[in-house]
Image (cartoon, rainbow, N blue to C red; front, side):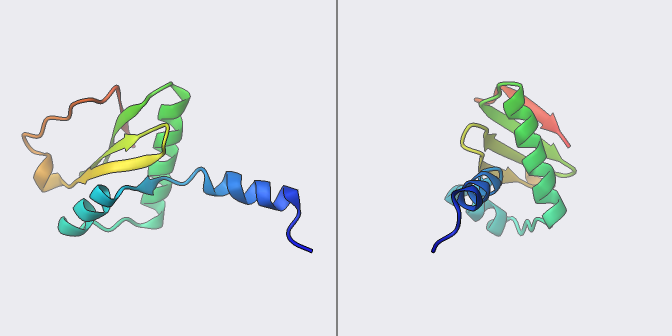
Length: 100
C-alpha cells in the first residue's frame, strides 16, 4: 500500500513553500558566483511569504549585498543581483520591497 493521503498532502504543502529559481536566475547566480547558504534560502522563503501576505505580486528582496526579484504568487526568483551589480541599477515592474 502507498503513502497515506495525509502524508502526500503534507509533502505537497511542505514543498510548496520553497522558492524556486528560474533558469535566468540560476544563470545569474552562476555567472556572478553567488552561492546561497541554507539560512539565506530560508530568509528568502520568509520574505516571499511575508510579501504574499501583503498581496505583493513582484517583489524586490534585499538581503545584505544581494537583491532578488521574485514572482510572489509563483514563489519564483526571476533574477539575482550581487553587490557589484547593484550600483546604479534600476528595478522596474515591482510592487513591493522586502529587506531581510
